Image 1 (cartoon, rainbow, N blue to C red):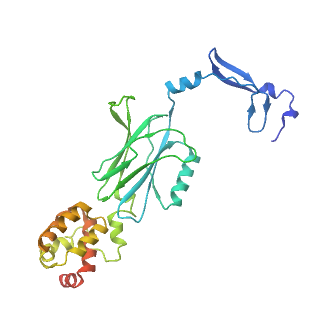
Image 2 (cartoon, helix red, strand yellow):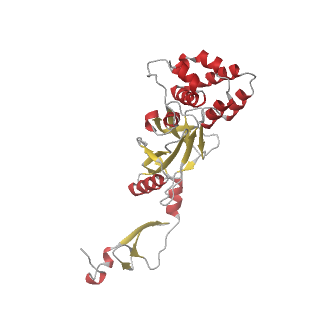
Image 3 (cartoon, rainbow, N blue to C red):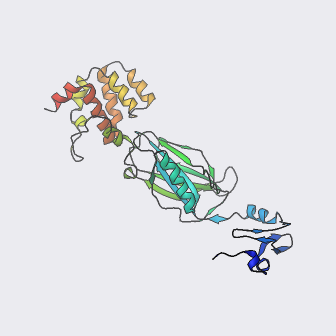
Length: 293
C-alpha cells in the first residue's frame, strides 16, 4: 500500500533516529519522511560510536567461497572470505562464472569472525603458493578481494586452513578458525588427470588394480628410448616436470641415465604416468606398439 506524508499529518512525529553522543543515547526528530528514507535537518553525531566500534569490533557470520579454473594441468583457486550476504555471494558467483571459473562448495566457518581482523590462508601441500599473505575482513559490496592459491602439480588431497592472530602484535600466534579438505573430485576438470584426458593421446590401458604400463615395461623403456629431449620438452610443457628438474635431467650424459631420472620423478601418482604414457605414444609410437603386443 502506498502513502504520502501529506496524507498522515502526524507522520513526522512517528519517526526518530537513535544514536549515541557523549551524553548517552539520543532520539533525534526527523524533518522529512519518504518511501525509502528519513532526513535530518541538522544532524549532530558523536564520534563515540565509531570509537566504540573500533575498540569492540563486531563479530559476524561469514562464507568462504572457493572457485577453480578448469581444463588446466595446474590447480588455481580463488578463495573469498565474505560476509554472509546472499546478494554479495551472487555477485561473486556471477563474476567468477563470467571468466570460466567453477565453484567448489564447502561448509562455511562455524564461528563468528571479527570485522577488520586480518586472516591468513594456508594450503597444506608443499608446492602451493598463496597470495596475498593476509586479507582484512571488511564489507566490500562491489569488488571483494580474494586469495589466489596456485598448485603446479595437484596430485593429492590437501587441507585449506584460515587462520587469524590472537592479537595485533607481530609475534602473535595464529590459530585456525576454519578448515576444509580439497579432494581430487572437488576439481575434476583440472590437474594432471584432466591434462592427460585432453592431451589428444590415449590414456593408459591398465585398470587401477593393475600394474601401470610404464611400470610394467620400465626397463625396456629405459634401454630402448634414445631420443629423450622431445619427451622432456613435453613433460615440462604438461607441468609434470619443474624447470629446475628439466634442466637437471637434460644435463645428464646418456639417454639411459635420463630415462631412469624421469622414472624417479613419476612417483607422484598415476596421473603423471598417464601423461608420460601419452607422450611416449606420440614420440615413440613404434616402440609402444611393439611393447603392447
